[in-house]
Amino acid sequence: MSKFEFPPSIKSRPVWGTLEPRAGKHHLMIADAAGAEAILGIATPELMAGTHIIYIPRGADHADALRAQNPAQFYEGPTYAASVSRIRRVLQDASMGLQVYLTGTEGLMGQAMHEAMQAGIPHTAIQTEHRGSVARRMQCVHCKGITEDVETDPFVCSHCGLNLFVRDHYSRRLAAYQGVCIDAEDPGNVPEPKGIYE
Amino acid sequence: MSGAEKIAVRVTEVAPLNELVTRFRFEPVSGGLLPTFSGGAHTVVEMRDGDITRLNPYSLMSDPFDRSAYTISVRRDDEGRGGSKFMHTNVSVGDEMVISNPVNLFSLDLRATKHLMIAGGIGITPFLAQIKQLDRAHGNWELHYACRSEALGSYVDYLTTTHPNDVNIYYDDQSQAIDLDTLLDGQPLGTHIYVCGPKGMIDWVRAKAAEIGWPREAVHYEEFLAPQPGKPFEVKLAVSNKVIQVGEQESLLEAIERAGVDAPYLCRGGACGQCETDVVQAEGEIIHRDHWLEDSEKAGDAKIMPCVSRFEGKVLVLDR
Ligand code: FES
Figure 1 (tube, protein in one colour):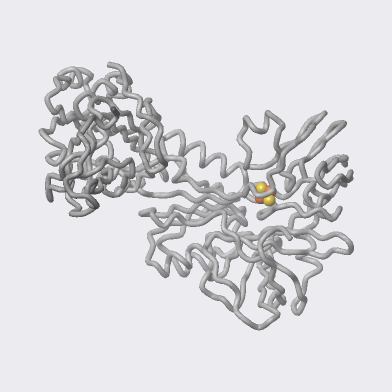
Figure 2: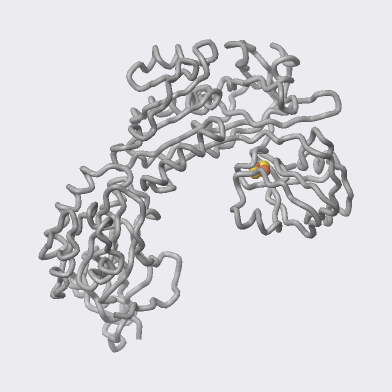
């Protein structure tokens, strides 16, 4: 599958990379949906022998292909929220030299990166690769509620119901982009929603 | 004027520690308080030796929160260009000197969950200040300190009596060596390494850490390069339109300053990047000695760090 080229943007917007195998005794790979393809792209028997994969399929059917690589440990989680306690546990027990690879949607990478940073890995040392949906995890700057998987701009806050404009302003701490009320001056004057990158 | 702001100080103590190392204490001439600093900072000491002025960086080793005085420890280097020898033989209690405000190129990363310090010889000095800083904040640290022999182990007694559980000493002459493989293996996530000592030690630690997958951002090091003497050479300064001669015993930066041209600097040891200067023309070989430029930049010969690097060849023109 071809990778989506994000248009150039402001500094705040994260820039995702391309996974590559790195030296290290232990490897933690966290992926959702199409992110599995990026893992399959770098998997070798030697690398997999030291790798713990945490995979959230979100409807995709790559779990068997990942399992077939014989990673040292494989965990399939129904949702990110259900997997986060496991991610924390792995990071808590890990030692320096652990390599972290995140791939899939921006929401998955952002949230897992926050966990890895909390555990003491500099964010610049964490590898990422975007795959699959370009939907965003958005925070409403007004009610602070998070709306997952936002595909259109503007969109309606799933918490307070305001019409929000999708910004590229990103918070690493929240792992979310900021959504700002688009019709505050002129309530009801809301442009027709379209795809974020249209 | 380039460099950090200057402070006039009086030498209030000269304490020889062993055959090679002497400690100096500076108090402000004005009687006021000195600026606070953070562990790992250095000061640049001006030495007036006849008509030569040397500016050498030394790590501050005193308590960063003690604003009444700074202390440094100087290891005598008989091979070098004489800065440390000057300190050992020409400086006595009561002398007035000029030092710079502290500059830190080797600060602690306070996000670290643990600070793993590795020192070789006189490289212990920045750690003395960092340990005082961390102790105040109840920081988690551990020191591994290699010295040549018991007789040359500066501050070993102080460290082992104040922190018996966190300090590990290795004497070369007793064939004790840091077991780096074991030391780096299994350190908790969030550990940062700090290494200060001879170049060989820094390279060894950095290479080992990289090999086993430590992020570059978690490995901090400091090595001040003393400018090395070398063949005299001529340089043209294009902006100031001057042709200057760099003597055998002086650095390019010192020669530029001697010609009355103000050139930027901070560390004078090839580490901070402040003195980076564009090369307009070079027919010959630039002898890059700094830690600042990338290897590709060094190969390109479009930039030079005048505090430590030299030139051999026909023509060198700098954008200064
Ligand atoms: S003055 Fe710091 S690199 Fe030259």
